[in-house]
Image (cartoon, rainbow, N blue to C red; front, top):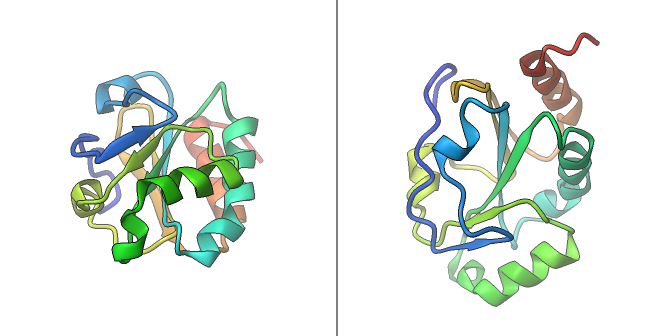
Length: 149
């Protein structure tokens, strides 16, 4: 995805966790959205999760947060394991389980963890991959929210 691209439809979930499902129309128009990709087999994802959860909690009234579980191997397809790791790491936001890579492909995403920040109109304003860079992510989220630092 390129900056200013429109958010893809959130179609093709193997299963939704913590939600009956979220649609693009649920997210657009209301407030900006952070969509983060992670995997149960990704150590960096697990290390970054407390920071993502902090974002979710700190910005809960200003920012939609959706997790996407992107399997990296056959082992990662186990739904019970995904649920278990989500509970262990306090991932309470809606989780799109993407066992067929439907959303991963729609986002052209290749890495976990990775983060996509969309403005309230559903246009991509920031994307980044890797475990670090939370300071930059916060800066971009604040910019989209109109918060001066």
